[in-house]
Image (tube, rainbow, N blue to C red; front, side):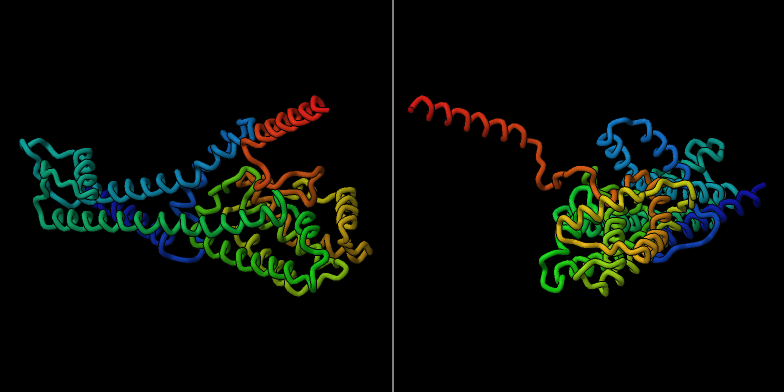
Amino acid sequence: MRIFLSILGIVIVLSVLLDAFETVVLPRRVRRYFRITAWFYRRTWIPWRNIAGRIQSAGRRENFLGYFGPLSLILLLAVWAFGLILGFALLQYGAGKHIQMGNEPITFGRLLYHSGETFFTLGYGDIVPNSGIARALAVLEAGMGFAFLGVVIGYLPTIYSAFSRREIQISLLDARAGSPPTAAELLSRFATNLPDQAVLDQIFRDWERWAAEVLESHLSYPALSFFRSQHVNQSWLGALVTILDASALVLVGIDGVRRQQAKITFAMARHAVVDLAQVINARYDPHLPERLPAEELSRLRQSLAEQGVRVAETPEAEQKLAQLRAFYEPYALSMARSLFIDLPPWIHREKKRDNWQAGPWDRAIQAKSLESLAAQRQKVNDHF
């Protein structure tokens, strides 16, 4: 039995160390069937998402979902720490000899406590290892506790730095494509009256690099996929889909707009969507809703035409648009369902204010201005 427990302890310790290495240090996706981190997120995200689905208010639901990403990091570190403590306790129980103050009998529960105080380097001295193997294990576990603390110190700032870089670009999209962003709003603001469409090309170029950064950071740190944006009507997936929608329309053909940069941006953004769908283990569903039905496409073209943006309307253009959408929409819709994210439409049904135009005091300020204006009018009337 002691030999079996020792082997079990070795397996647990090595499994935790390998999983921590693959999650924190290894900058690439791991395809192994079972991983502690993947198992942890599957067992925690699904019930969290189900609870969020019962919250009626969109703001409160988004706030609740926003807690999961940061909280999951802390819980994952706790799972790793407990796994190491349990593994070393099994090793101590199977291979070591110990003496406890008062010569009380050594049980597995007390060795688990001893492993915990050794891992966190408390060193009360109430349980003392009394063999070479037990002392070696204690030293190894204490050193691993320091290494674990270093992982925590280095891992969390890296995660938040990548999150900050991601969100800066999403915030910049507010004034460029609306809130939530749409392809129609982006093109209507930047695809007309621009010499050689230099500004639109620069926007596509910036988002090509952003998509590459999101792909790299989310492959290296998959937990970033669960981090929500600062506003309810913003998300990293929604921003990515908006750029794909806009570049797809440019590739279909818009009068006077070049396609070269849009083609490159579409390729990079589509690459990100496909790879990240595999990272979060999204499942394909052929019954997902249609994002751009025929009547919506007609309204989109009419709205853009009113702004001077004329999208090609030939049968070949419609077929090409359908092919381009098939490249990314099934992946994006599956990810949106898995992550509980609302994808932005191609075009808003009614005019919406950008986030920068909205504020909590706007109604009060406007009411005060109207009162002031009414008072001035009253004075004028009285004067005349």
